[in-house]
Image (cartoon, rainbow, N blue to C red; front, top):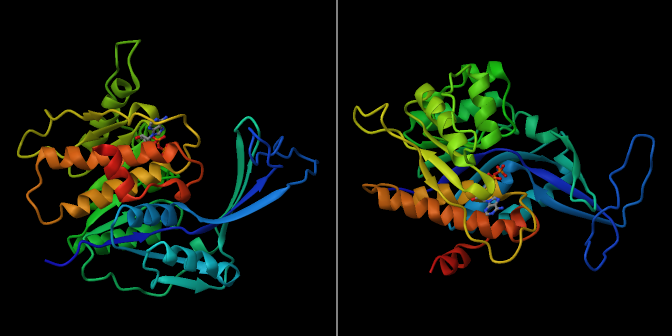
Length: 339
Ligand code: ADP
């Protein structure tokens, strides 16, 4: 049996961090974010590959998966493609286009607040036709490229019996969400805010929770049930930050209304939270790499349990470190923590 192999059709950026002086406790933060009419100095400028497509592809590679990234950079930052290749991602289908590379200008102040200017650039350029590798078993999508390009690839993948995974971040427009081909989607991954906004956009009736002291998990349950009834052939995963993850699996047989979401607690952290940036992308990469390892097998509840526990452990380790892709742990490190 061929594979498993994962395609990621998504965004690639240069992340540019404008930082202040290095101080003992307040490392590299700007004192304040620039205000209208103001000019401030940045003591330090760091450039790294970023974008949700690159970050999820990177997390997949760190989790041990074979991954093909399909996207585009401009001539101004071919190094982004090259650095991603050095992390183990196959970049044969990363095109170099006339537009400038997508870019995020990021300022973080001492209070930890940030401000970001995002330039779509090459991520919105049209790219030449590309082949989907014949061993591909999974395809992962986010929403930092034109939704039409995502849908085109998703439909192709689905018609080749490839499992499709969509993390609709940032959330598409109401019109786009209403017409999205949910039937062709195997897994949806959202955070709690996106789950709520998606329910509103799709005008779904969400059962009222009568318990005022309800937890984040209990708040999310009716949202997942509503989403799952709208897309009954899609497994719905909702990440809840420090409250872990809630999963509504596609019910088997004719139990369609009786299945309830399954809750997985967050990982116990070693030390304090340093930076939650990229935790969701780390979770997605590890979750999909785990599903890939089960490809072709008769998957049991225990198998799914192990996949989610590992992805949650990886995401927990990710928040213990600074950075997005840089803080994604390696598979061996996650396995060691789980022992
Ligand atoms: P996003 O960044 O996409 O909004 P979340 O904030 O839900 O995603 O985080 C994704 C996952 O990262 C969570 O489901 C959890 O497993 C892990 N995580 C995030 N914040 C924490 C935390 N404070 N403690 C432990 N795990 C966390």
